[in-house]
Length: 325
Image 1: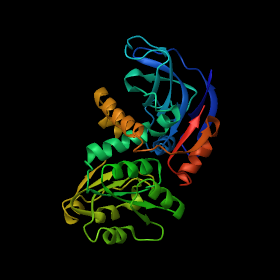
Image 2 (image 1 turned 135 degrees about the horizontal axis):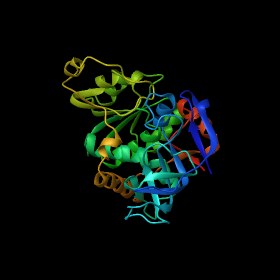
Image 3 (image 1 turned 180 degrees about the horizontal axis):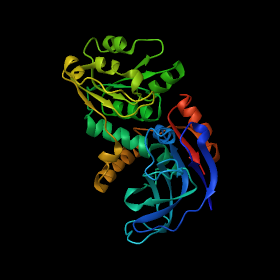
């Protein structure tokens, strides 16, 4: 029996239940991991609340990101062995001391990437990789707007976009978060609680507006985000921290400048094993070089997952948060 955090009914953070569960031997194409660190992400709250249905029904072990060592290998697994250090983004089952994992979703960690770094960056860092390099190709001179610039994805995105030569504008909710964003590569900070972010973007860019807006917030930043874009700019919605964007009249995109709008997800960008490895290796390279640092700013014991969710939803966290079994 191993410690885990399960959801028996959908609801608020109080439905996260710390208990012992049995983890069977790995089946065909699976590995068993002893986890050293577990990532905490906003998507975990979507599953907990039922916004995203659990593919395994109820109860389920929350979480889909982590890092650990392989302790058993199932039939048909050839490229991983006992003792390998791996990180992953995979189906539910993350909030546990041990877990089973499809072997084709595990990525071997380089020696210079720690378990805690990996757990703090596999989902968020690979998300930033595809957002900046694949969804919209950011390069020298690109003007980007990143909402929630001091959050888990935001701090990585600010550093990476800056590294690629972009002008980085970020929205934050407090002076402390603004300072943090600036220290992590954000050139211009907008305090969305005190300022009209659309007016400030126009001011900062002298009316040129942005090439791309990366929006993980959703309801409260839409449609303002569209007003921050130049004609034929890209609105990239990758999260819904403030609630889902309601169905909108697609003619808005034409009226506001023949804009592009997309709602991408890592699941599709990394569906093929070769794409998963390419995205992960890009991430390992940029982190290994020191150009992008992974700020793990909150650590919680596995039994304190409820508190971790309360802090995350209360906007009380910055950078990455992890659980330690």
